[in-house]
Image (cartoon, rainbow, N blue to C red; front, side, top):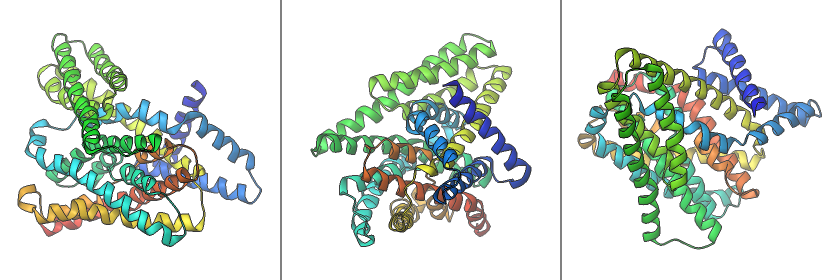
Length: 412
């Protein structure tokens, strides 16, 4: 385990240095580009009969760390908590119904649109994928990734209200997407079709339970923070809330991601405003900001390295390109059109629909869910489709989001 941690940190540190010294892209995008480029070079050399030992070592390393397990059970809780810690509840309440509509209805409709769209299109490309796997792909690719979104929004300079809605949607639709994914995985395992009541019950238990657990966890931590004034103990309490709370959520079979988001909102607002001294607040912010930056960089390095796990064939690459289009069309239909049609109710600046569509980034969570599918040819197809969408999302949409925001702001 220590060797794996050492390899991850050393690789991330070196690639971060190279990016900062010569390439100068945003750190998450920069380290991912370098890691992916190096991995593709290793794959190419291996196909030519060269560097097969390095290729085998990278494959062995990636399989030993289990990217899906590492992200979903270790890193995700810290990243979601850190992201929610600085969102203002007062501002969030002004857009609670808009964010809720996009996170719940938007994710469900997008899952259906992507799933059925790919099921209809893939046979035309000579790629056969059962409807259930298409719906699984829709469920894992429809939620926007809060890690990617919030990392890139920092440099996009979007209007504050618009940034809040994008960030809020990404924090909550992740939990909805995981519930839908779990529902389809249950269908895959049992071979049956759940009733509407079963689906609603799962959603209430997973999502509702996660929201309730997060609120209780956040409030209890707030009470403890309020009774002491010792910054290193208070930082430790926030760390314990995340690690212990996420573990408890898994034991109770409720949504850990939603629990961490709510706990972060409660501690970041009540705790910061009423239970922390200026010194404590400074140390808590510094600790979680630094941890967030380090884990983000490590995560995107691993995401770039995962390219060696992808199956490359011409039909699958064409299918990946189609998946990019289908995903964007689904996002435009389920999010862009409603926002444009009900602009007064959403209360966002003109051009918000375009930014919401283009700012709907997918990231490592989608890849982690794809990797959690049962081994087989269907998993390989879904993983390739997912990776194509994620790479385009981060490199294409992520690097150009600032320009899209600039165009929208200029029209105001």
